[in-house]
Length: 485
Ligand code: SF4
Image (cartoon, rainbow, N blue to C red; front, side, top):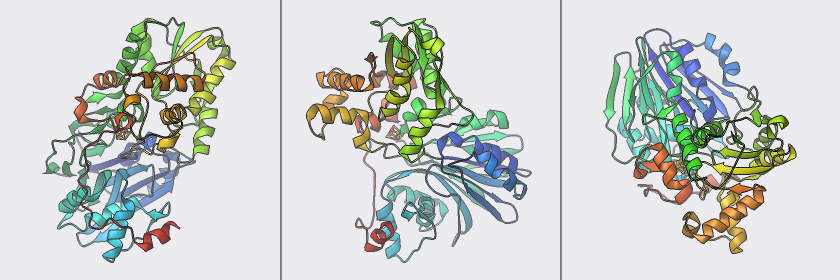
């Protein structure tokens, strides 16, 4: 989904910007970038797919100077974008996911607008956003109009001589939070950035809210909208444990998820409770606390060199990381009945090949898989680069049970239905586990603690508020097709 960070301080901001951006490294694997405004803009972008942000940018910091800056860990394209516009020069970073890129490109091409950056055969999404913004009557108007025409979500930080404009996406899928310390203001995707940099949380931006932070403090430029659909998956999987969204801590939610699963698990006897690191660990701790069974670590992550295995865009890379990063401890596994808590099951192949099989190979007596969310039925269309629908384990099960793909999967979503039970049994059998029991949707929502209507739960139900897309031209023109080819 990408993570974004910005800071305005009384003195030089580069060191704070460097660490603040680096603390978003779990949210993207492709590009890192920083832009600073002192007398002029200075900007650095590096590919971080094979190295850490810190090592790539350490030397750059010595050449950057200024009291305000923005940074990004990008899951998709090169950022920050610099644009010298009719509103003056600015730099921009974005976080989110846009589905109608081709339609928007086509519209801008027809207006005679060109793009300089290319990403994955299309335009750089952040450049596209920048060019949509400058269509407005002013920057604020442009941000609002941009958010009306995109299909998906986009939170952003825009750096110019005024300071940093921070805008959270229209329905609040992705978070943004403002922090303050005595000599600086900051804005971040993750609150976990703040404690070590000595900031305190001042404000969680609401959906569609726009604020400006600068040397004088923070001013609201557009109020928050009522509708809120923050991504529930942030708490389950994507977010950092020390982060809070809407004031609700990730680690605590995961522990509660584990507790709810343990409460519904009165029919199995186990020896140890474990979790697949990193996010499965907190779910397992909750399960262990509720069940009274010991938490152990039969699979340990070699965390020195391996990040998450989900976000790298290539499946080959994800599989390689998944195979290498978890190392089994036979002495803990041998002859044990083990509960394995996991955040979710996406395709299921990594869980089968690199967890279940490793545990059997080390002599496990029983393996009980407990994902902390219901079966994933739909790929994300708002903020995460999730798999295609056909790859999802639940869809594979349905295809096998029905003999073909079906559109209406409502019966498979209802955990009381026979079809749901048959689907779960198919997945269990495919994984080779002793039992498989998914978290119920209502337990997951209760664990998060927000009303269901304030959460995005599209991954599990396919339900979402209708986007207000007001595109002028729905047909991609031939220039788009040529670029893709
Ligand atoms: S579809 Fe899923 S991953 Fe995407 S915003 Fe909604 S809950 Fe989050």
